[in-house]
Length: 547
Image 1 (cartoon, rainbow, N blue to C red):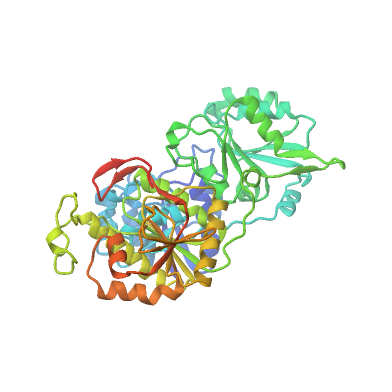
Image 2: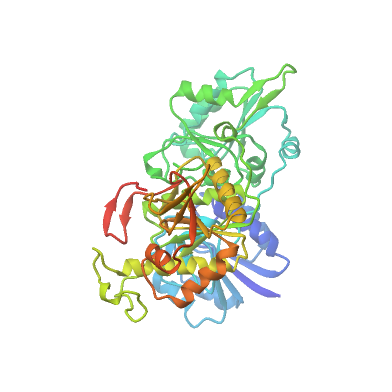
């Protein structure tokens, strides 16, 4: 049996040890597993998940003290076939020590990450393979990985069965909060809502530790706990609560990037939370989130999520459905290819937040990440070599060449998906309407492309030039403008590929106009996507939202 050595920064509370435990239960019959805990930060209190992992591996569990170089002796003793880092080693291992682990190795190295704050520019070591726990992590760090794969924590959803297992009444509306009891987490506010909703068929649940150093905060709350509140403490099965409960209520006033909110969203829970300045735009465009305002308005909103029927049973509708009417999911296989470069900038983060929502409507989403091109572009393969320059202003710059390469790479990767349609977006594309309306427009454009001789469809800006038809629902243009967001049907793939194979490079818009002359394109009367504000790589200036 092969030996697996897992090195983890900690085994305290949160998503990392929960994910690791789940992973080890799957691997325990395939590997002899050893676990190294770099630092014990549990304080002897936050030990539920740590104890589960210790119980799983028995004597093959090690906690390092101040002498971190002990890891080298453990590696020598275990002789692992695989060393796995449960977080990027750059975030918790001293560089010289990490260099020794990565050099002269007789083992395979894998890694993962559970955060989003690490800068890809700080990546010093390349594992043989990186396993990402989310699509956003792949989008952020895929370009600095060797081989990679996305492996998500499994989501289990069976509301009634799980509630019954927990001894709860499925007829009630169940509201969940997860987190350590502290003034910053502000559980007291939730208990005030509970007091105001006494007598209603609603129950509030709190999962999280009550640490001794915060007893001054939580003990008075426990002494006056409303009857419709239930305290569960720290749990090793928090996934069951995410799976079965009806609303995640997060009243924290002091946060960085709350993992519990991300976990709730991963389980498709509707979330109500405050929009703190520290979040930047992290949660501002997420369909599953509604932001809290004043106490009375919040109470009214929570109360609106459930009401009594004549049979005295709760009838509740998650706010996602109230805000956004159901739409017909895409019937054809559509793959959205998202061209990205500077994925840690506000503009591209906003674009990713907008476009990743397509996955909720049966549209595959694939980020296409490329390094920013900074050298003088090649003249020998350029359509207009005399225009090549390092500076913008009617010239062909490194930014323009990088843009061309991004579009070409997106199309070529898209071909491998064998999709009926490829939907290609530039790095700053944002959907400029409710998602249900966009999906309806997308379905409509697909139908038009199937039933007419149109070559493709543009969703971005157009200047009303070259319009040759004005039909009800869509217009037709002779000549294409709109590389910002466009839809290609399978019937056009061959000619599109031939264009890239036989043409010299140019600005994407002009390349399409010149090499696909008189290929009719569909457009909507008004663009349905916009370009997000931010620093333009092509123009080297800050821009506002624009079409």
